[in-house]
Image 1 (tube, rainbow, N blue to C red):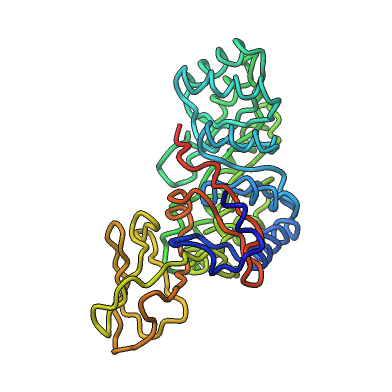
Image 2: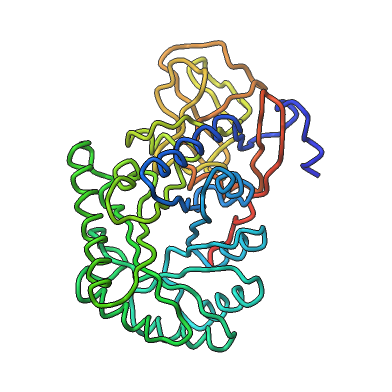
Length: 366
């Protein structure tokens, strides 16, 4: 049992292993929660990065009102852990998924919100809800510029909101968008301007729905790459930023003042050359495609490459350390593409294993 490791030094862990520095993570959580309080908006952090109810509960203890997930199966995991206020920031489509959603609400009493951008989907959600005697909350997803899901702001949003509101087994609750297209903009001022523009489309859509006589309780948006500019915008009620909890380098590059809290501990398994280090963590332990990890305390690293089971660190000069058998830690710079590969997160405090947190949402793709 992994729980028997609690109280042991981190050196007792086999590798590769994902380590969470509890104090660092809690500082990140406090920063994000404080930012939301400062601007008078609610925090509903997305769990897609950590997939771990234990972390969601820490976020809620700091002030989060609930959780955001991407799939019904992830909502099931959160409800099973006692998290009842859940936004599925995605479309739930087809009879299997819509009935599964309705069954979840009926079985647990979870207050689940789902997003729509299509009238046919509204009808099948309504039918499924009727079958189980429930009334899920529904948000209309608005395309604020990302060109992924969502209806256009203005009359298309109003029209779909009316359809939801007219559905006897659904509760129209507001609108949602994700301004993700702005994250890739390198220039800080351009990115800020485009975030403000995108949020303006969402809040404008909300006002159009209100003008049509429908109440809009929720205006939800914002991620870890945008929350610093999203939270201050007038008309927003909640922000979904979650990834910054682990202080990913991806988000630090977007001005988020968080600290790296998640590392991948690996063992040096080979030193075939003085300028090359081989570790036992490959792509099955971390996916470097979004933003590669950074090796802590190793000087002169020119590059890190990965095959299935090996990491290869190339140095710019010969070095004796680390030797075969030594441990290294890699800062995980994009949590979403590492955590789901592991069964557990090892929560560390002062070099000691304080808790073992199951990655309960691992593999939950439906």
